[in-house]
Image (tube, rainbow, N blue to C red; front, side):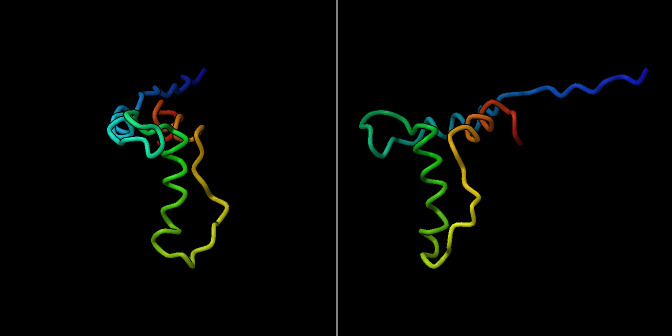
Length: 73
């Protein structure tokens, strides 16, 4: 029998720490939520060039959570 390969999931503390250093744009005295971060990231291409049309690829709250938990690289 061949040995199985298990992956070890390690939380990405750098992403979480970075998000927790950014002030919420709508909640005074609070840090940026995952939803606020997703909205900010999704708006960046349009800020850089208003002529850019959405591609259908977007960041959502679940994806940011998976990044923070180390489930995606």
